[in-house]
Length: 133
Image 1 (tube, rainbow, N blue to C red):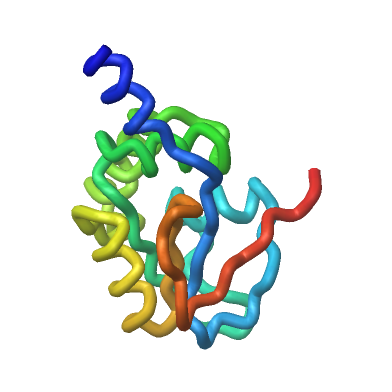
Image 2: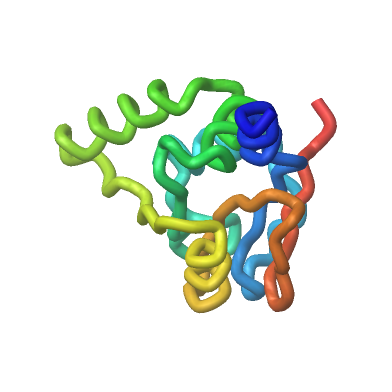
């Protein structure tokens, strides 16, 4: 019974894309979000640099984000980041250890984007809606 409780406790509810309060973008498509998280889009429409925050690959919220929002597996995203970093084409996203750290980092960093589950407190941040496909 305890094992079943542990399995269910790691389940993640809905994922929300968050951004710094200064970001005017209110919607992103899956393709746009994927371009941002694969470091192919590095600026917002207003020219501001995008600062990408992410959780460790093993974090349940990160796993849910990559599968449901980016439509790829976490290991595929890791491979892309490694390839871009070692080729000198891009800097990897900034990894933080917890949802709380991610929220605080996005709150304090102009131009930033991140993702959280719907159990997190998001005062002072923008929620970016997902465009209908």
